[in-house]
Every structure is written in C-alpha cells, then in structure tokens.
Length: 297
Image (cartoon, rainbow, N blue to C red; front, side, top):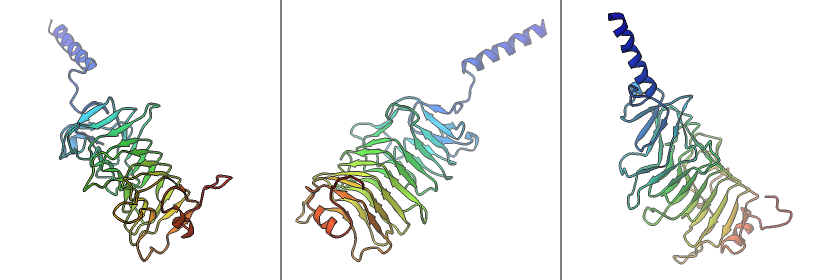
C-alpha cells in the first residue's frame, strides 16, 4: 500500500507539472504583461518579473498596455532579443511612460517582428526603443507612433515606420536619434519617418550611415536629417518629401549642418521635394539632387 500511495503521489505531481500549476513564475519565454525583463538566467536576475529567454529571445504573446512612468515596458538584458510577433506595446492614454523597450547589460539585443502582422509601439513613451549605445543592437521592422524619440542610440535601425507628433519634449521630438554606437558602421537605412521635428538626428563623433530613408517633413519639421559638430556621417540616397516649416522667421532645412561643417561627411543621391523651401539650396550646396528621370538616387 505504501508503494501504491507513493506512485499515486508522483502521478499527481506529474499531472500538475503538465498543467503548468507547479511551474515557476518565470518559466516560458513568451510573456503577456508589462514590466517584464528578458534574461539569460532568471536565477541571477536583478529585477522582478523575469522572463527566461529561449534560443536567445523572448516573445510578446499579446497586445499589452502599460502605464509606468519610471520603468520601461520591456527590458532586454544579456544580449537577449525581443520578438514582438505581430503584437503591440501601448502607453496608456494620458500617461508619460518610460521607454517601450530598453536594452541593458550585454550586447547584440534586437527588437524584431517574426509575424506578417504589424508590430506596434505606440503612445507617450519617451523612446519607442532605447538601445543605450549597446554594441550590435538592432531595431528592424517595427512601427513606432507618437513617442518623443522613435529609436534612440541603436547600432542598426532598418525598415521601420516612425510617425506621429504625439508626446513631445519642449514641443520637440525625433524620429531616429543617435550619438554613434561604435566608431564606424552604424547604419540607419530603409526607414520611413514623418511628422517629427527632426527626422534623423546624428550627434557625436562616430561615423553613421543614413541611407535609403524616406523622410516626410511637414509644418512641424525643423530638419530632415540633422548633423551636429563632429558628425562624420554618410548621408546618401535619402528621399525628402513635404514642404517643411518656415516658422520662427527662418527657413527649415532638408539637411541641417553646423558651421563649420563637419569634415569627413559625405552626401550623394539625396532627393528633395521641390516644394520644400530649402530644396533649391540643398541642391546648389551639393547635398541634394532634384527629381530626375530615370529615378536613380
């Protein structure tokens, strides 16, 4: 009888495990709520609400709405990735949230979307994705709407859609902002950016390539691409649409550069809308070219 009782007890435990009743809180790499941290090993996690990665990534299992003003909606640590899997991260209405996704310790974290459905980060986040200058960081294929900064200090930013005035800082906001992650090879490419004070804002002294982007400037926009002192950027094959903003008594620019202009900066194949008040000056200054046929930026 004793052996039979022991056998039944282990069977019951096995049933609980199969049902998931006895699993630890951090088991499983798919998560369904805000405030989660994706880690290699949750036993060593510095934060609560840890999600242990599988195959180097965590997966967003559903649309989530967040309201924290002090912590990001999702943290990526130890170089782990986030697959948004066609789901959304939303800052609740009327709230000024922290970052949507924040990368921390380790390098190589990516925010990607494996689904054919659109992945969305939207609402009053400070940054949609904040990479914190982590090496090999990447944001690809995400729609980001109404944040102060769409993508901030990331190594590779490709094929994203970043739009919306939304939350602002002193009435200003940014599509893509970077101070340069590494000395060379940072890439901002194939993105669509609209309705931002600065479409692409490049500072610091590291080389950054901004190529093949479409920047739609409106009455809200100061600059399509902005360079600061020391920015040795490659700015090529970008298309600037829209009329820009001639507010505050001065014409806003297609490409803003400081004086003196940074040495080592290269321009080629950038095309500007003829209705933008700065397009002619951009063309005559050798930074832009007009729409011509054949259309080969």
